[in-house]
Amino acid sequence: MKNITVTALFLLLSTNAFACYDDKSLSIEDTFDNCLVEAEQGNAGSQYILGVMYRKGEGVAQDFKEAVKWYTKAAEQGDAKAQSTLGIMYDHGRGVVQDYKNAHMWFNIAAANGNSKAVENREIIAKEMTPSQIKKAQDMARE
View (cartoon, rainbow, N blue to C red):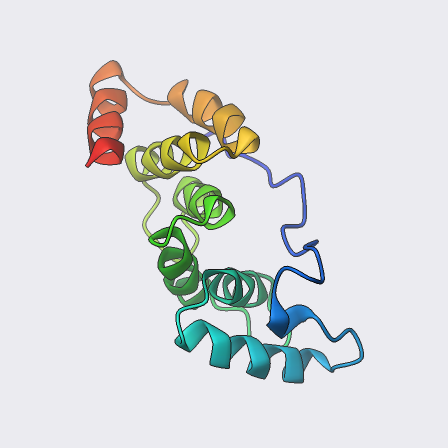
């Protein structure tokens, strides 16, 4: 099994991009609380940050299933970072059953939304898949 390594900490975000992450003087717990309010209101950026916090165990207990939940909410709104991270979660089997087809699908969607790292990861994971699995993943991405 060949796992894709995460080469960048996705939490390195522009402080102006997400209100819940703006105030650097807040504690990690207050940042979490701010992000939770915004995420529950449908803010994809805040949903993504919550996914990161749960995945890394920052301000909350590490919980991969909860991370996947928040990444999925953001990904379904078109957040390419969340889509790519879901690919990684499926590749590693973190919070979900390991599934190369779903990993490939999310990398494919993220790549279509401009995430260049997802292009690389999609090519890496494709080497672990049969042609029929790749076709199925591509069909899933189109749907």
